[in-house]
Image (cartoon, rainbow, N blue to C red; front, side, top):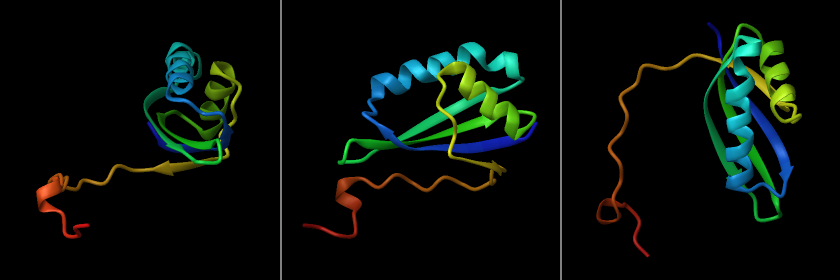
Length: 102
């Protein structure tokens, strides 16, 4: 099944609570569109706009759009088909291991 990363840009008044509700709704409707929502990431801007990134398995880009419209009405601005790279995750940097100190 193809894997897609989509983005929603300049989402006004974005809160983590609102994202949680919208994502829960995506999970409720995903099967209607043959999609499976895997994860969501949020970037909150200081100017009260935000950006969301969703990772979705779906048969087509159209299925991704329809699932979003059905769930909450927010169309993705961009949709990219992606593949998961088989890479080893780097070790997490702890404060005592940082390269730059204040």
